[in-house]
Image (tube, rainbow, N blue to C red; front, side):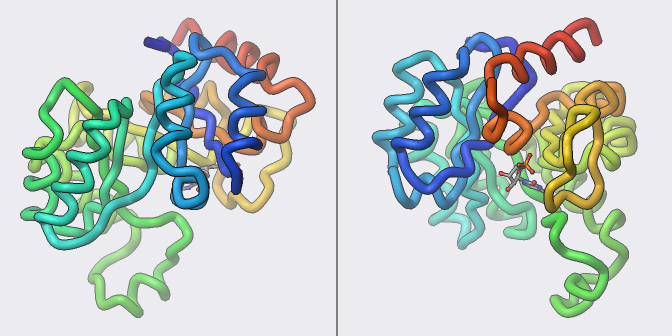
Length: 230
Ligand code: C5P
């Protein structure tokens, strides 16, 4: 299994594009994330293929449904042998506990999304959720922790507070990462790999800085070197 903290986001629309990139990468230097676009297009066979060439796979489908349905989906993900899977913490306590029961601790890592970073205060007010985004993030991270999930997805800017609140064993997975000198693309609040690790992140989700690079393997090597001794 890879020891790298880098998770490369395979934001592609076909298995062919995903495999082309995976073949340029090294399973010792990164893990791979498959989201809903690629999974809908390419299905479990792509996951099996990527695992067969040595990659750990994070299946980022953000399950959110009634407890039984989510539990069954999590069980299916566990049976595929993925390294990590996620659910929406907004599904609530019963759903989180059902998901946890379906994915035994120590097997596939089960993490939760708290508040989507695309949502601002107005969006949250529209839904009727009370409080400021950061309060809701903390509340949902605490709920995920209470339900024995392995961690949450969060911004590296939220990581110090969540680390302090939830202890060292709780896994913080952070997107919005840009190595120094990279363009920010559509990410609003970005953090360098080095700073994200200092802030308490365990794993960095990195898409375009690697997927669009002329030499993706070199970028992975450089980021691993930057965070290697932290
Ligand atoms: O290309 P980039 O590094 O911005 O890609 C980041 C990846 O992390 C994408 O797959 C995006 O959907 C995901 N993500 C995010 N922000 C979140 C949650 C997930 O950017 N809050």
